[in-house]
Image (cartoon, rainbow, N blue to C red):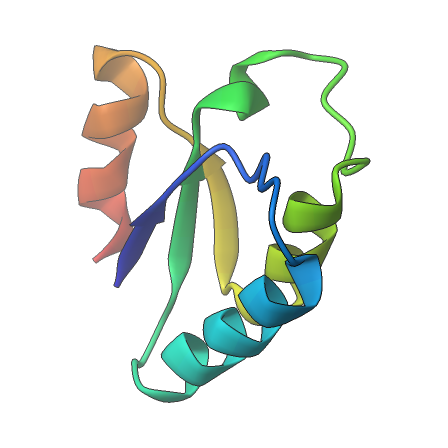
Length: 75
């Protein structure tokens, strides 16, 4: 399953983490596509990012055609 978000959640991060855990249990693999990963200095500082990370199988950039093509190699 693909999850496309920047992770910059402004609401309850604990609730986000709970729902991400639920989603991860319902799929074989949860792949997070994050447009902010295009930045070399990206750090998991936002509470939403920290809430999602423990529940994803992979955390990948998605910001251009090359990053979208790379998704085809995940199968």
